Image (cartoon, rainbow, N blue to C red):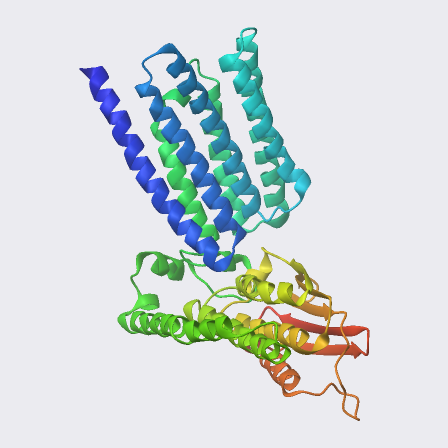
Length: 447
């Protein structure tokens, strides 16, 4: 009777975990599709790995013959291996690791791990040795990952790095318990595995600022207390009263109406044009610019307190298609973590508009083949440096020597509002460089 109860309990757990994993995968997938945040994609990969392991381990209870048992055994251990490397990928992306040499570690770990598992399950000689090598491989790689994240945390000390470090150490402890116990609990998917998947969900919500904005607490010039973060999570307190909730709902409604109404009309007009006709090509380009501006406006309406990093990331996603059609290669060098998270809200929107105006001018007038966007933190002045460069024809000038155009004047006014400094250098047939330096502290907060 106890065996039957365990069988049905295992199947019920598999069904519930599958439903939960699919729901989380859907949410993270939609977030990736909308914002193109690499952390969303990495989290979806991690959840897919966890789902593969949980389903494969539950299938063990259905194996009734020896061949099916071997297949279920291999699927379980392979699912566990995939979950390990998927979570490692999530941790590395969450700490802004982009170097291929570092990511090659988990790729190699996954390939070698699957080869050793094949030897262990289907081999005829030294199967115990294959299993021991597999255990050593995963424990060494997991320990190296935790050590790397710890060193990165000591160097940066950001809230995000500390969260990832906690997750890697917790996963390392679960891995030691799984792999160093005889008949490892891998086949039984203990409760710790379910709680760890839930921890990964919480970690994703925190580091993507979907619950509060704790990253700002350690950045000079920002005022974001624990109480306000708690209000964002719980929904109680002055940060989320009925009036602000009503305003947020109305903003979302307007954004949706703009997207579904005006956006759909622009798409229909674009579809009706003959792109082979020169005159209609110009009209199509102008309509594409309008559609891009509309999408960016909808993004800013729907997300009012994003950091400058998130805002620029969405801008990159929006303009990439237009640049590709024009044959313009974009080089993107924007910090994805650190003190720039402090530049948020209205100030981030002003930086976004300046960058958007630069890219729009390049697409309309520069006839460039390469555009480079650089955004980084300058520790000496506690400021943000933004540069947009192209190799186009340059900007026409007035007799006084200043670049002409209302768009450029608008950029200067926005920079002045930010308390920053804007420089525009241009040379005919060489290109143009826009350089913006903005203090992370708001102008009224500067001593």
